[in-house]
Length: 391
Image 1 (cartoon, rainbow, N blue to C red):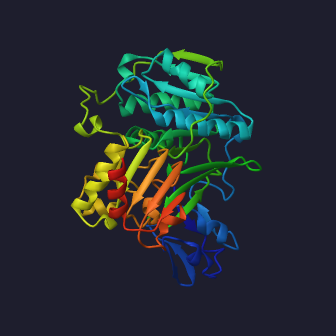
Image 2: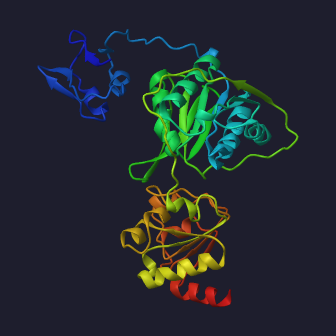
Image 3: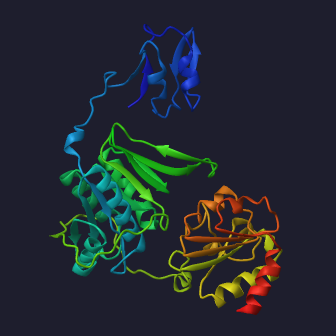
């Protein structure tokens, strides 16, 4: 598929040049010409006053899919080593909110888990769960997962599909979207729907976190998004909630790869920042490795985890596994203590959904105070030393 200009219709107004975000249109002999670098974003089509820009193999009015045949919200519920991943529960909460707003059914798909995990999904809010409990699916493998999820979507036609922006989701959900010729917005931090058009509003950081972009996919169904772990609130757990579990048998797909063994990294045995209730994070304001040790001491006394800004990681005061922010982990603890962190947007998007944020910084104008619940304008090293002595 490509775009081209009907030279007989083009009036040389150059409106399309200004509309193209990729500088993929030039003027030749007073006519617009589309270059090979065109990304087929179609921004130029709507800008052309004489409808001179066309899509090869299609008429100007592209045939729309039958949107009425797509209904419901489907969540891919990830499991790890046979147990539900926290992101699966978070997505059920987000999916429940969207389904209630649209007045549709919320379903979930889970591969390689058991009946107990499927029942948990119902108690968290799913109305129907499609369960492939084959033991060979317990370990993630791109091809079988892609085949199974795309098959379920084709059969049941949900209008919205959600998955976690984890290593698993990032790996195979783009394949699912490509197979279905559907749009995909990755790494979302907020979700909503436009009730008038039923368009899915998918919000994610863009341009290094300097803006929050709301992305739509109005011409394709389903609308697919992967969501950052720990940014969505869990729904209401109801042990008495009833739903339907559909037990399915996985067909014998030929896969070009086979999982021989799954080995946990040493870091997985340590505290998981996305699971703890308290995180103490340090930034450049801690002054050096000795100052950062105060962060580690306080975290240990509080029974929490150690976080860090990108600056602290780049200085070598701690490892990347502790980095919080757009280029690190997204966390949502009950208490987040930011020590000597300025609070650039790249860090804030990774922790601003925490229940309580305590910021300690000697700069009263530090951006971190814009998202903080409690503000302490002081030297973080002095405050941490006092807290450690008190505890």
